Image (tube, rainbow over all chains, first blue to last red):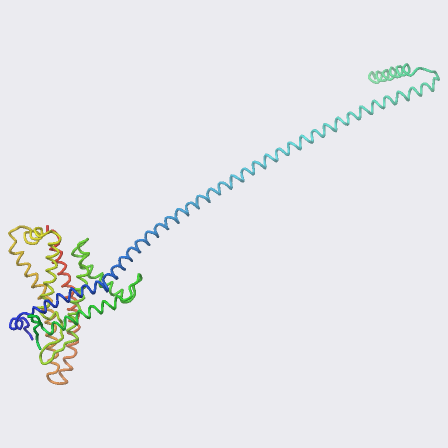
Length: 174
Length: 234
């Protein structure tokens, strides 16, 4: 029991065991390969590939998100600028409109005033002319009634005119 | 029956039975651990992947790169077999009329010598495959210079013997001490049993540790010998 080597030497070497071990080991290796080694190592490789892919795709989506965010940021900045341009344009347009309306109103008022002034002048002239005419007619009538003398209207009128002019000169001289 | 003859070869009954049992244990353990292989590992698959990573790590430590890729399966199977063979004799020893039938197969020098021989035969084979026969001769025996040929030749035999007898010595000594403590336990009735039982338990626990260490050492040295045959010595 304590000396298998001596025992083996006495009874002859156990060559059969060696053969048995070798055959059994090769068989076991094959069985392990078929039932466990291949599927497990394949799954381990698949997992390694999957993890690598996941890392890659995560990196990609991260950079995508970053570029998207910077796009948004640019767009926001642009819209700010655009908005301020629009406001400035509107202000300018409003100012122009206001100036135009004020000018228009001023010129309209000016025109109205001029029209009114000329109308007043015209009416004054008309009134003056008609008053002069009325005075002349009246004077003729009065004179003809007073002196009973039949003058022709034109002589009479000339007479009245010269008289009135004489009055005017007297006014001026006085 | 200690041994029997078959086809003109001598078979040791204990060795045949023990080797068969150890191989069966390895196969069924691996088989049941690998039933549900999924992308997210659970339960048995985790254990299996841990062992595979462990033996692959041993191989990669000696053979970085592509050379190590094909040795993973060999290292995995050898590790599991040596481990379970070492543990087998610790809890199951069948002996009838002084003749062993079940014990650790690695407690027999013929078995361990065969294992070492298989390993070294694989190493020499892989060396020839990689460098061709001439390259294998010069790489294995004539480096660093041709005068070292005798020493290199002797080294091949010492490799074989140390690889085999280290494993055998450790496991055989462990089993012998177990048997001695067991014999002591039943020598003088109850008092010796009470004394011997804790000793037996302690020694069994230590032998489990020894068996695991020896399995690791055996696989590591196997890959070292293989790597020395398939890599160019500087």
